[in-house]
Image (cartoon, rainbow, N blue to C red; front, side):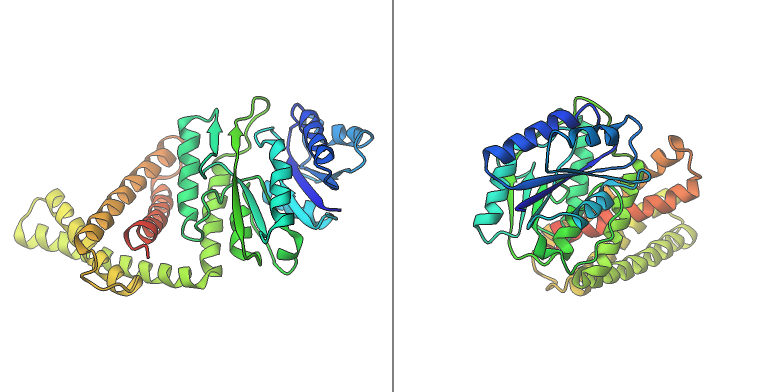
Length: 355
């Protein structure tokens, strides 16, 4: 078997018949010996039963029935456990990924030294059709966060293929609806290639992405930091510098307000500026190990802008969680600070202090 393509499903009865028809047509046209493994999370609309019936039509169609909604990442891994192909693939069930790209992606791996090929929305020639502005911002934000770990343009893609040998000795433990980033970080690959695709938003059924998946993703990023030691070391240093900056902020605020007699809000602004300056110097010299005079004005301006955006993100998340999700405001603030801090680290690593 050349290719094993996993299709995770949850309530995709309306989309699956057409998707399978297009996949098997493409495999036959391209003379690829392949199989499709549907991993169904106990769909309420009868998706699993439908696949059982379609198995009579497609000889190389298989299905795994799971007990509940366990997530896309684990569905991919469960499907690959029974896969017979030398190349493993994944695509969504909602017809958003172009099946005509299956053969191109497959032969890129088969005929070249490429170990991992990605159907990319963000390389030249790739695009997204039918998404709202909110969805685009969310996707771009997640992609930006992933830039700490990889230069891949679309590390959040759900359409990719990888050589089986690259993952045989790797332990994956992702939760949520994306697994590609963990593959990029952990798999034993040498060459990655991105193929431009047109991603078309689903027309039937509902998207499975929600607030829970966002928090799964942020949690995964935290775990990846411990896996990638160079990034982990920078993150720890950045945290220590930031902690010192908090102390500077509080001391300046207290001194200016209590001893100099400055109005407390003006004191807070001055304290923020001095703390940001302290953090900039500490991170430039210690966290990212740069010479002090290297592009000093430009990098200071960038650091200050990232700090301001982090503050804005903090306030936005605090407001959203408190007002719309009715989370206790102190709990909201802890979560908001965590998200803003991660953004601050990533923004400065890939923009301010990038190599």
